[in-house]
Length: 171
Image (cartoon, rainbow, N blue to C red; front, top):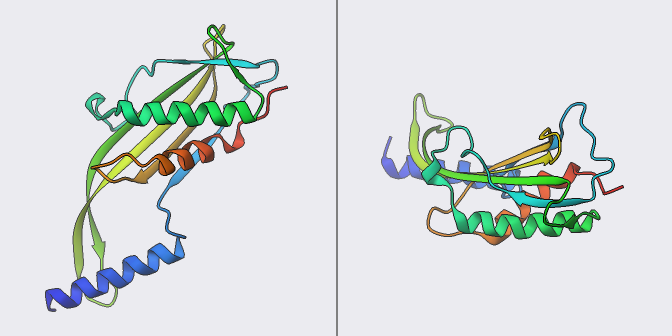
């Protein structure tokens, strides 16, 4: 098969996937840890992330992404009634990473036809701990394809919003 035909099929498949997926490749999960409760917690502060996310080297942590993520976590927690306070009763730890992934995409209609591509994956992790017990109360993570050459504030804002979607309001 001619290379141009393979490329055309790949473009059609990617266009369909983009429309079918509403243009988002973001995979997000987040929730209160089993047996944990946020009742009685009203304040928080940011603490350092101890490690890069699993599968991401420490050098992949991006300070500009963390700064934007902190801003958006502040917004999300403030809307839910939590206040940022030095010595807060919860500690929020953020971690992020970025890595290159080589993938092979099977092209529809061709026996054994495939195209290889490389994409940059990013991850953002939000963990919330009880200060006194050090127990993790909440864990959330978002994975998405990112532009290796720029930081996308809207993408980070969406990731934080979706990660904290199940975070309960302050009581």
